[in-house]
Amino acid sequence: MKKWVIITIVLLILLAGAARYYQQRQRQQEITLQSRIRSLSDENDVLARELQTMKVLMGKDSEQRRIEKQVSTIRGLEFKKPVRYQRITRKELPAYLIQELRSEYTEAEFKQYLHSPAIMGFLPKDVDLERLLIELMGEQVAAFYDPKKGELFTFETFDLSRLSDQVIYAHEVTHALQDQNFDLSANTPILRKDNDDRVMAAKALIEGDATLLMNLYLMGNFDPVKFFSQDLFYMLGQPVEKLAAAPAYLRESLLFTYQQGQEFCGRLYDEGGFARIDDAFRSLPESTEQIIHPEKYLQKNDPPLEVSWPALPVQGWEKIGDNVAGELGVRLLISRELTAAQAALAAEGWGGDRYQVFVTGPGKHAVIWWTCWDTEKDAREFFKAYTSFFVKRNGLLPVDASADNSAVLLTCGGRQQSFVLKEKSVLILDVPASKDAESLLNFLWQKQPEK
Image 1 (cartoon, rainbow, N blue to C red):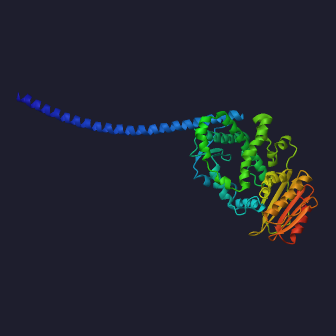
Image 2 (image 1 turned 90 degrees about the vertical axis):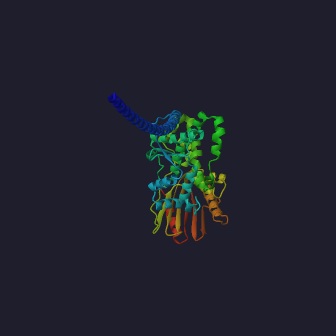
Image 3 (image 1 turned 180 degrees about the vertical axis):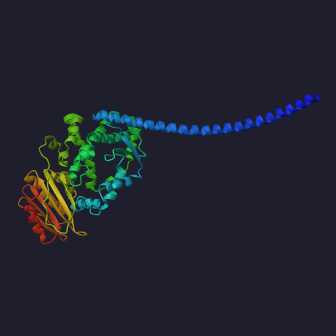
């Protein structure tokens, strides 16, 4: 009996120990399980956030593809490969722009390139144009396409739920479509440095096409309730101070590519839809004159004259500018002192031009500008208008530039200016006053540039 009692006690002890062990094991498992539950809960939160992010990204991607498809349908061109997208912050934009400038110009080359328009009178002489361009781009650019990289850049605040941003996106996607079908870097002169007029004409086609499509996209997707309750206030809140304060030449040149470019493309569209605009990418407009007067492009009867200079007997001078003003450049220059109507009249009938700017030490420069016109009447109108422009710009007394006068010689601020009219050409020479000025002028008339 005692034996069973002992055995029973031992069993009870073992059972009690087993129970305690089981309880401890159970508590440990509960602790482990609770820890695992907390860990799984944290992982679930992370996964939930990732899933939401993926939904947002997929939604954005879906919206991007929807706009791409609609742009492709409207424009009548196919994407040959997926568009590559990049996000950039406003703070990163200045460094990006400077990097792009330095890929095309050294700092010294860019300063020289910008110094010439200031000497010519297109821009104020004291403007820091590089800084101004970067500030202006930072204010005005909502998205942009880089044809050299084949990438479309948007900013951190870009939101495709807004119709206004969709419209901007449609504009930029059109540039990707243009590039994939027409190769903008290889087949347009947008990287050319010696003919700003031809570059401006090509940009007017590129931006005009995208602006026309953008407006067609807007018409097809316009939601008046959403627009007036959301987009309108957003658009009205966008800054324009830098654009408004920019020199007129810079501001009007920028607006020209969009506004006049759209009118040009609209004229082509009326002639034969987007297929006619496609033809323009294969046979580019050659001058801003053809953008301003589309009939001159359509009729192909007034190509610009290519003016090339002879070798000039100028020793000790460095050439820092060699470019073309074009009808737009002439108009914007004259309008700095005369009315818009007078400037337009002076520029109309432009046939071709080329100017060169030389320097020899601080503050010492020379300008030679040869302009060619369609008729003698056009040449006379420019001759008179430019003389008036120069006189007003420098605060001089009025000068006779009537039909009986074909040459104006002025001395101003230690410089000698010669404006000479001969048949359908006007030669402008601005050099430091010296006995060599007249001999240089005579040499230029004897060695007229090829046309």
